Amino acid sequence: MSNKSLTVALVAFFVVVGAMWGTILGLGWQPQLGLDLQGGVSTILIPAPGQGDVDDAKLDQTVEVIRERVDALGVAEPDIARQGETIQVQLPGVTDQERAEDVIGRTAQLQFRRVLEIIPPEAEDYAAAGDCGQNLEGPPPADQEVVLCGQVPDPPADAPESQEQQPTKYRLGRVEVSGDQVENAAAQIEDSGLSWFVSLDFSRQGDQAFQELTGELACEPVGAPTRQLAIVLDARVESAPEVNADVQCGQGISGGGIITVGGEQEARDLALVLQTGALPIQLEFATSQSVSPTLGRDSLIAGLQAGLVGLVLVAAYLIALYRGLGVLAVLELVMFGVITYGLVVVMGNTMGFTLSLAGIAGIIVSIGTAADSSIIYRERYR
Image 1 (cartoon, helix red, strand yellow):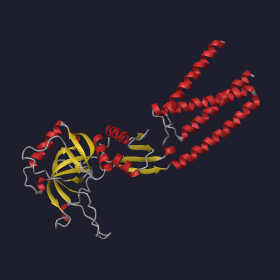
Image 2: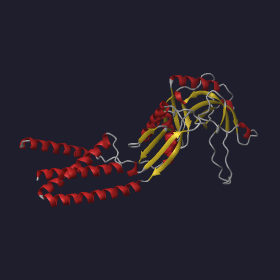
Image 3: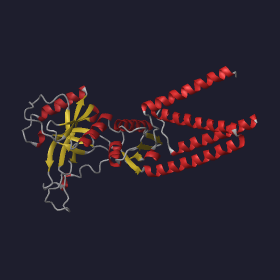
Image 4: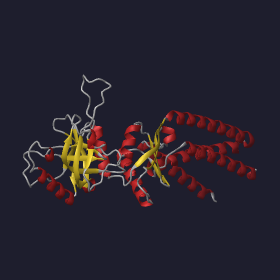
């Protein structure tokens, strides 16, 4: 290669490297760290028993629903993989393990049913009414009447700590509107600013069914249990509002519905799982653990220290053996490290590449390989 061609190649090389680092510094990019370096939540989910054979199509669909939920949570570079019937979910940077489990594993089977009877805890037939669907395998059957429980009420301020609160039981009719007919869900706050709710937008068919259902309920006497509409989520009655008195019989409510919940986080999480759709199968957590970044950080520091000591020894060996050529070899290794680190940062912010302890070990090994190549080249040159 002529001197002119070599000069052009070097200039082009430094221009490309300079542009890469200019972009990194200008945009403030940082390497994307994996679960073992920044901590997070790691879970393994398996299909719940009693569902029969779970085929690959349902498992693949389940993975996609979980991926949509995790993306909506704003988790950077999650790792969601399926191994046979096992689904592994790793969420770097997530600190709230309980919330992550609730969002990931929630079946989110939404049903709208007529209230046929309300059975309070003090009723004589409360115990005989049923077990609130605890023995059901999967969501409550859509074409059957069921007895489900509402939420457990907060105990009164003067209630003894040992006193266990019992939920109200509801005898419900068949499903007349389902979660499959919900096209959009959004968390909103009431005008008073005191409570949150989830607004639902139905599909055209769902809106028609919801209007017919509420129109029929509006014909029932005001105050009667049969005028109430139960909103069932995963075999629990989230709420059972009564159709307002100003709704005319036979007309009903169109334009969507609402689910009243407690706080902002609960409303946003519920809207998220309803928006992304229900899981096609029920899952249970085989393992779930919160990974602390402390161990990964200590291992990272130890690995970098070991790599730095190794590089210093290699550099001293090259300079002692080859003198001026050895200095050039050290500069080559420094440039190799700068380029490699820059590529890691760029790929992490453009292609989703995450840096783990294994990746750092691989980078150190690649620098060692580059040092070996440099030594072999200089031996041939000498």
